[in-house]
Image (cartoon, rainbow, N blue to C red; front, side, top):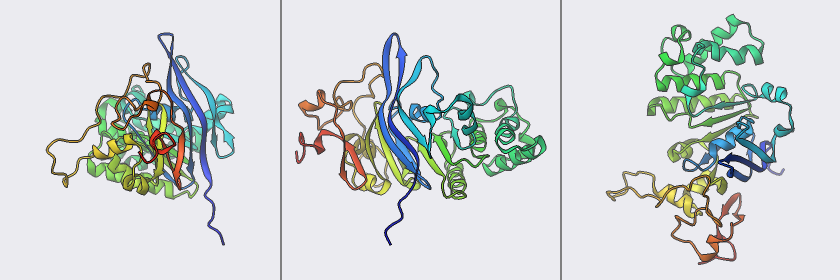
Length: 333
């Protein structure tokens, strides 16, 4: 018998999300094509300003309009094209079938409602629980994410929680309905290493309860990616630069940007006194350079890099890279 083909839970085709800033069009996400399999832990990495969070918000259609707009593309969740659904149908999916852990818990939590009420809301709306049942489940979820005395803290307001506790409350809210797809945007940034490990374990446990579920993890922390993810997508200036299995990406990074990210990981084995860095900064969203957006920081750049945007090429099985070094312009250079 042949190997059973994995089913796609999420498929994104030619996604373009733009913002109008000072009468100029900023291409925050520029032609993304990727998929996430059922049962997969899918990582998205890249420096700030690469388009990671905008990609996540686009999937849930949470881009503020104006100034932002999804100008083209398709986003399939199972057999549903999310961009074609009514606003009411999208509300039924958000927090239920697709949940998101937002990057900034202080601005994502409503300051005038208790933490418990905010966790209870999706349970009442999507799971038809009464207030008593929802409160009991909210306490249970707060306990799972490591909040001490959850039966007391459930009635606290966000300002009464520390930054790390607010982050854990956000995670509890996102996980309470056991979603098919969880999008986690920097979910462990404000947490210490011990709690971070517990939260990642909890996210994996929730995913494993449903064979068809998946997690998209957006992070700067390549160590977290290495420990948890099955495949990784590297983004820069709104475009995919490399996609590969986690093992392939760490053992054989191809794109100069990916190599730079890998080299910057601190290591006790390295005897250098200074950390390796990628020169320069991510270009401003209104000033992405022509050609390959990374050419301004790349030590391998060629004349073609300054003029022509490289295509996303399949160079190995399930390993894609967007770089002129791997096409006819620079192969074997």
